[in-house]
Image 1: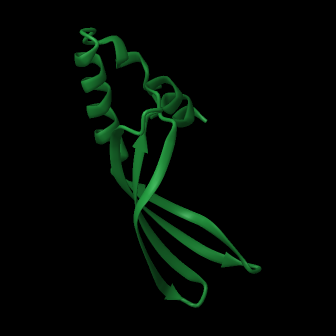
Image 2: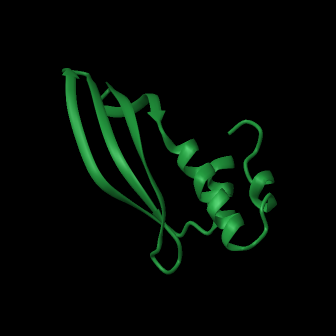
Length: 100
């Protein structure tokens, strides 16, 4: 929820999967690595990042059991750029909740 709030505040309007790689680790365990691209309302790229999901098959449904990503440095760089473009360095510093 907090991350979706940050997305709304910086103007994210869509997310697209640029790349997807799925590996079967065992009959019940998978790893999916995706490259995401986040865009604003004009479809300008805000930033992209990679996320790896470990999924397990439980009773025929896949559940995410672990997630690793490199999003935070990319998000912070986007916030710095938005601040610089607006001439308001520091304005976006409070956008990220302490737990993100």
